[in-house]
Length: 277
Image (tube, rainbow, N blue to C red):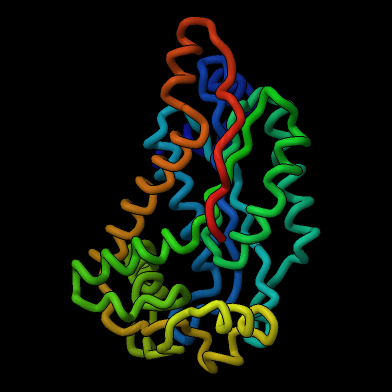
């Protein structure tokens, strides 16, 4: 990935030149540093988020990648050693300050990518407040359809290996394959094992958030981690990036806004829902 996409690797004059040239979209990943079973490193979600943000920015063509918010809302993982968690209020304060800072420099669209399940609902809840904080000339959008994300992974795993039923949403065959595609040296494939095998019903999800993931999965896995492959991981990254780009473009009318900008027009209109969580 070229450094010209990564905000924190650029100089201030380089950022100003990019903004003046119309690269006024900022992509912000919201990850986590938390347990991912006995086989994956704690930075799974943070690293995945950074990769997705870069893939999305490259596809958009008029975007820069803001620094990933690496720690997220992970209280339900705290019984597992090494996990870190932000209070929801802290997470929102960080997102708020990111948006206000980026808006002050001239970014006109800010796209949030939650790469940790516990960040989806807080982002959906704060979205109106983030938009109010930046004013009418800036559009803040967050992808918060966790169901669509998991269904996409399940379809890919089924097509590649016939193991779609092993996708459970956390430290499973999909997430393990994503890490295998990014950092194979950090994946302990011999320790990949089944976790909670059942469907994620509303009752199960409520128990996870109220009692912690260990209440339903002693090893911290939702789904089954066996059967990892780099090809599954590569497809999950690429097709998730496409899903995100389509969502952001539809939510902000990015293509129409580009045409307006070329004619001297303004900023994409507000509107569009934040999806499920």
